[in-house]
Structure formats: structure tokens, C-alpha cells
Amino acid sequence: MIRVRFAPSPTGPLHMGGLRTALYNYLLAKQCGGKFILRIEDTDQSRTVEYAENYIIESLKWLKIIPDEGFEASERDQYKQSKRREIYKEYAYQLIEKGFAYYAFDTPEELNEIRQRVQQPGKNWQYDSISRQYMKNSLTLPEDETKRLIEQGTPYVIRIKTERNQEVKINDLIRGPVIFNTNVLDDKILLKSDGMPTYHLANVVDDHLMNISHVIRGEEWLPSTPIHVLLYEYLGIKHKMPEFAHLPLLLRPDGNGKLSKRDGEKYGFPVFPLSIPSDNGTIVPGYRELGFLPEAFINVLALLGWNPGTEKEIYTMEELINDFSIEKVSKSGAKFNYQKCLWINHEHLKKSETNYIKEYIISTYKDISFDDIILTKVIETDKKRVNLLTEILDDYRRAIDFNYVKNNISKNSSEINVKILSNFYEFIHTKINDINGELDIEKVIKLYIKDNKIKFQEIGIPLRIATFGIKTGPSISEIYYILGKTEFFNRVKTITDDF
Image (cartoon, rainbow, N blue to C red; front, side, top):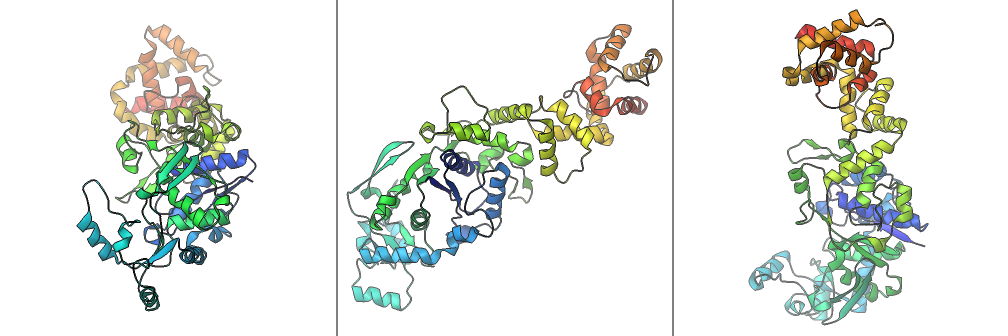
């Protein structure tokens, strides 16, 4: 059975690149009738952020990327590495007994001193098969000295013992054959002095015990893969080693470098799915708060590195599950294009049923009290025009709060021709036979234009500003439909009186 995992570290808010990893794992599992597992890799307790785990859970819930295991609160501890530390110790000591790992007693101060002393320009010093020969470890110390240090409680770490000049090969499902030479590898720490495992040991042990068949993760983990392959071999479980697929980086819009939080601030778009606290204490909106439908954001993530080989760009989750293929994921980085994100969201809004959008808005923006009828009308008129749900919310506020409209009118007061508005209001009440019945507002405006020999914009722009406070947006007939006849003309009369 296909078993994949999404294994984020709760060291901060979940980046959209992490969510893309979750999505690709989910798509592969669902396509093959397999299982998708959530595992929280919190071995670095010093960097763990309190809200991060809940942020991960809420992000997955928003996108309906629901894991089959490790998701529910009642089972989460079984898939959280900080709760499994004793398991990793057993495997670390197994490696010691087999001669594939060793105790290292070097203090942080000693390591820092030697780095500074032997550092070469352009090359980082590393603890490896050569340097370990003059370091303080169980490979250089007499056996009785090693035993004495351990018994007296001297802090130590356990490091993997790499050999010289060996080749480690993997067949990456995206990149094809990749070969590493052990001469470039360092002896990674497997167990830290506080008894917690590092990513390398915990990752391999958990993937083994959880029967993971495919490891789909970001390309930043590719350099660590030879260490993981060696661990599978040294633990005698290489026959159960999963297949690897390393996803391309998400790049800045200009293609120069990895997309980061700072780039989002620079270019004016989020890089996180949900809102996050900023460094100055304010709240930075994510894609949900900005007004993206979850299915649209999934569509965005899917196309960041995966190309179906067709012209098709708008996908539902069901279509993605059917069409997705790891082999069609690109090796090269995926350049982020926010304008395309807006277009994708626009296309999903156009295709969505009004009731679905309404229910989603009501459940998402819970701090707003909605009038069902007016919200429905606004969605009907806006969904084929706007890019974001927040634009619908803006128009809804204009529809229900005339004070909000009047505040905006002041910004466009120079566009209001009070004489024309007043004449139009008088025209309606003196020349239209049945002012109390239903009006075709477009026909009425045409009659007024013809009768007064003016251009449409001379009445159209003042009317839009007087009723909705904006020069662009819904058409006059759409505003009239949203507000209704009474409110529409009351606003026209109020503005002519105020000005």
C-alpha cells in the first residue's frame, strides 16, 4: 500500500511551500487508494513555536487536505516525535553496537574554537571521517575512558560514522539517478546531548516504523538523503527504504532565489495560507483572509512545479487526484506569479454556485453579521467580475452601510455633478409614469440622457458614486438590483441634499 507522510516542524507558521508538499503527498495517496499521514517533527524544542502546531492543523482543515492518521487530537501524540524519544534512543544505541555510530564528547566551545582555527575561505569545517580522528570521541579515546565519561555523566552526542570514498546512490522520482560521495558528508549528529534525536535519525526511524513507501519533500532535503540511505543500510532495513522525490523550490517572482516571508512583504502578497502575527504585533492576512477560495488555493499550489502537459489550468481536487503524477513535477524551481493566483481564484469564483460562496463567506468571516438577501445579491453580481472574496465583502458593506459609502464619496466629490443628480431625481418623479412600480433603470437612464442631450458618463459616474461611493465596480443596474429602488433613490436624494 502507498503510505506517505507530511512531516512539518512547528517552528513557525506553515509556508505555502510546505502546504504544496502536503498536497502532493495527499494527491498521490488518494490516487492510489493509500494513506496520508501527518507527523509533527518537533525534535528541535528550542525553536518550537507555541501556535505552530495548531496553525498546521488549521491550514490543512481549510484546504480539506485531511490526513488519514495523526490528525485527530486523540492520536496526535503517537505521531509527534517529542513523545517518541525513547524509541529513537534504542536505534541510536543499536548503531553504536554495530559500529556505525560513536559517542562524541566535544563541548560546544571546543567545536567553535576548532571551526575558527581551521576555517578555510569558502569552505566550512565539518566533523567527518578525517576530522573526527583528532576530536574527543569514542573512536579516539580508550574504551575505559569512554566508559568513565559516560558513567560520570559527561554530556555527549551520538554521531553517524561515515566511511571514506563510498558512493551512495538514489533514484529520485523527479530528478532521476543521484550519486553522492561520502567524502563530502559529515558525521551528522543522530542523538543530541539532551536525549532528543535529530531530524536524520527520527525521520528514518519513523518512516520505517510507519511503513512509509514514498518520501515526497522539498529539495532542500536532498543533501541529507545520503545520510538517510546510510542509516537504512546500517540499521539493516534498506529493503524497506521508501522511494524519494524531492520537489523544486518556490522562487521569487523575478526567479532570483527562494520565496521567503520578506519577499511577500516586498511584493505585497502573502506567503502563508492563514493570517500570522507580524514582528510589530499586527496581524498579516494569509490567503484565506485575503479572499481566496480553498479550492482555488489548492489549484495554485498544484501548479507550482507540476505541469500536466496540457493547456488545462483550472482544476478541482477530484481532477487533481485523477491527473497528478510525480513524474510530471519539474526539476527546476517554480517561479511564483501572484497575478496568476488572482486569475485562478477569479476563475473558481465564476464557476462556483452562489449559495456555496455565500455559505463559505458566512463560515469564514464570522465577525461580520450578514443580511442573507443582500449578500446573495452582491455575490450574484460580483462573482464573475472580482478576483477576491474581500472585494465581495467590500461591496456588501457598501450595500448595507450608507455611512461607509458617504465616507468614500468625499474622496470622489469632484466627480459629483449635483445639478445632474438633482435633475435626474426630479426626472424620475415627474416624467416616469409609474414611479411606484418596478423600473428598468437602464431604460430610465437612456431616456434621461436623450432628454438632456448628455453623455452616459455624465450621469453614470455621479450615480455610481452617489449610491456606492466608487467610480468603478458593479454597473448602475447591478447597484440598483442590490440596493432596491427605494434605497437607491434615497441615496441619490441624500447626496444631492448634502452637496
